[in-house]
Image 1: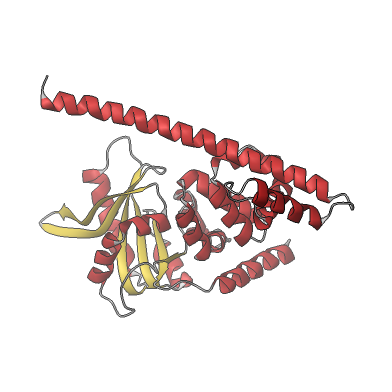
Image 2: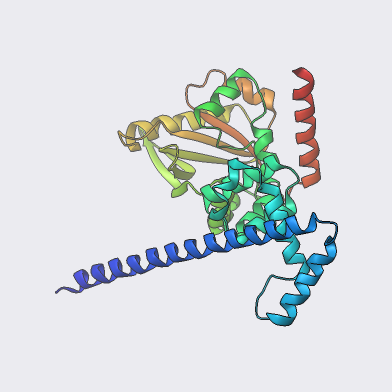
Length: 332
């Protein structure tokens, strides 16, 4: 038997082991979440009785500390979290069937950081879709991902609305690239290199369905060579996505350049089963009115988004989102 065949057989066995471990972990996590929910239900019902109240939880925590010190998480705080977990979702059929797909650490972060049920729904769905670790989820919550996503969905001009719809509304108006180790005054090449260096964090920010195809991706049109800053493939959209990086404010002429890239990609690179390519112009600033005018005659789906090198004040994002919601209510 050749060495190559041996390696392939070993690889298959390793994959079998990994799959079994993942299923085992998933089952253990499912049972753990169900256990915490049952304990939370029990505590919730007990504390409704005036004869018990808050002292019941403290007594239960003292019992676990004395009789079962090896069990972790059954402190007064931990027991209250189980009670809160049950009470948040007890009458909610919308999420009750998917709660076991998240780890307890992710549930704790969502419960402690989210103010509304809508925000909790959003992060629960996002965790399931993107398979976030606890650290990845914390980063998205701390960066105001929910607020940025909701603000990106607000009604806009017909042109911008059509572009967003054609790309499945997956792109944000603003991306937070605080993980890039670059100063404010940076060249586009430095920005590109830093993104490649921090590619895992960048994909976390733009979405895990993105896969990098190449940087400075070469296209030949006639006798000229052109280079796409970053070329990705998006599994959900089934298309190539060209990122053009700009360190300054958006300019209308950027659209023509990206249109050339998209046309070349569709003619020379795109496979027959794939959808038309999409462009993203990622710039430091943009004027929505200028963007709307620039895209009004464009035939290719091109998004224009801002990036920030520092975390945006989450309270500011929440205030903007509240203003948008209040305005939408007033217009009804």
